[in-house]
Image (cartoon, each protein chain N blue to C red):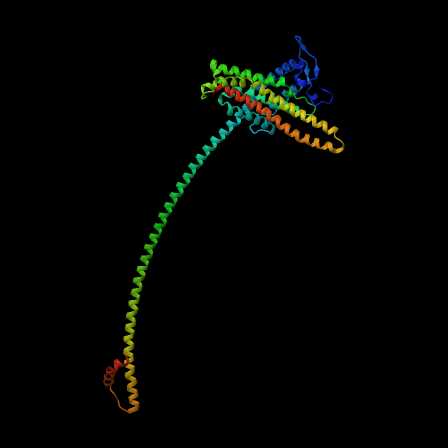
Length: 163
Length: 244
């Protein structure tokens, strides 16, 4: 087995020491610090971004709170205004309704009075017409001249039956 | 032993240029070349992909960052806050073993992690480092690491030697695990590659298909062994901080 041949042991150890020492020193002094710098830089950047993101989030939350406050305020205000308007309108409506009611009542009573008056007038006319018709009819049929008083007496007697 | 088409021939070391220093042979070999490639791949990749240092990473930069975070996570999970100091070392170890294994998966490329001397050297660095760390952190009290509390007193003569042996065998188990996995995997690939050539007619297709599947498995093992090496290193570091 060539591995157990001591001929090149010293050479192997010598070059191993040379190359491994070089590698170790180079990585230790040059390569690894570079990579560490990059990683650190990135971590810093990430931390920075995270903290600024947090800040922005807080700001956004504050703004959201403000907006909500304003919305609530506006809601309360509008609610009040709506209530006020509704109340005013209701008052207006009720006052108008009551005035209308009064008007109507007045008109109705006026109309009733007129109707009653008309009814009375008509009743008088009817009585006169009945008397005239009776007078004419009786005169034509019997040649008896009835006086108005006689006719009125009869009508008064029978008034209850045809009225 | 190392015949022309032996499956072990791939592990032979060939010097590229012969160098001698103070009477020792330190020739630059194909193994050293693989280490060079490994180190170049790691350093260039980790340097170039992160060159722009962009906050939004490119895909390649993301790979580097994922590796960084992978080991950082591993270390913080096992050791905790104390582990940050050892991050460069554990990361280098992980990358060196991982890319070394991956470079070995390239056909005709040498796998230096399949050499026990290399893996043992790495494991010995970990072992010695962790032991020194233990004595720095706990002084002479570090020896109580071998003393398991809550065990009947008559068991200690048996348990303490076992603990000592298991502690001393750590570098061996750590290095042999990696070495044996790489050795076995590459040998198996070579053996089946030999079947592809030697089997009659079209039946060589079957070992070829097996090699394709095995290559996928070997890449998985390459990652897994690097991970195991790194996580065991982390656990040993943790032991140096927290005794029983």
